[in-house]
Length: 414
Image (tube, rainbow, N blue to C red; front, side):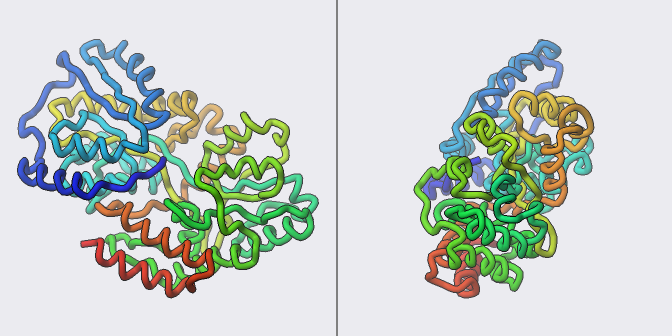
């Protein structure tokens, strides 16, 4: 998902509106699940385009419900949700990205998850954690993504590399070998700066045992573990193994295809792009888990499904979400979209259980980590983006950059 920055004036309006209404829900029992009703749903990006078909099928066995799905672009999703919340017009069900779920939960716009219906143990740990704010779940995991290592196996042979790197030290050694022996232009593609650079940095940070915020939401971005991770990340640029400047919208798959980039960290959608656009290199690349430092830990991405606190259709909304997030619904959604299921049971049959490549994604999700949901997460991570860029461009040490970020983030959290 692509994240957008909150518009300050609108956010203030949202806070004021929610304070005035106390945002405690409708106050009544609402409409019964089996009553005739219309359920409004907002979903983002490709999911918004595909969910309408699933809703139509759901309606065949729930003829009392008319589900109206509104697709919303990720580039405007945050603004639309903020404006709708301020006006008291949120949909009954909405897709929530992990970067701003905490913001809406903090303001009372979301209904807490019924944990008698939705069980934490059914989902990947990090997927569930993305929907938790202040110790309470407000979103049910819908789909997940994470990052793994993509690498060119044919070029690895030329470089004398016999297997995927298992450790961070091996990752850098392989990057050097690709460049010196297979004569690739770069060794590893990682983001040097700009919006959401932190997503490229997370596997280094989490694998080293670092974090931006601890489990209580306290800033810890200048911990020794985090400094070590940023030192490691920055060394790729210092040694000329990674490119210091890439254009906006840079598509790493093009350079992966030509061989100028032999390794990169990417999400599951990259597989489809490579297979569709570059069939000539099929069989010449593979994926592997993130190389381990203290452990192999990647970031957890994806989305949750949440219910508006003011919805009059909470019972029907809960049933629809239960359908979408159950094992059967998740397996069906994977076949439609290739979104990775958040429900672990969906991985126990069919292609999800037998495909060797998919097993890598499941393995990585078992250890993946989510950043704590807090109201100003987008602003917080932007401070880390700036710290990373100052290191990759040689303008600061990792310690100085993260000390600065720590001080700035402390002013953003409660």
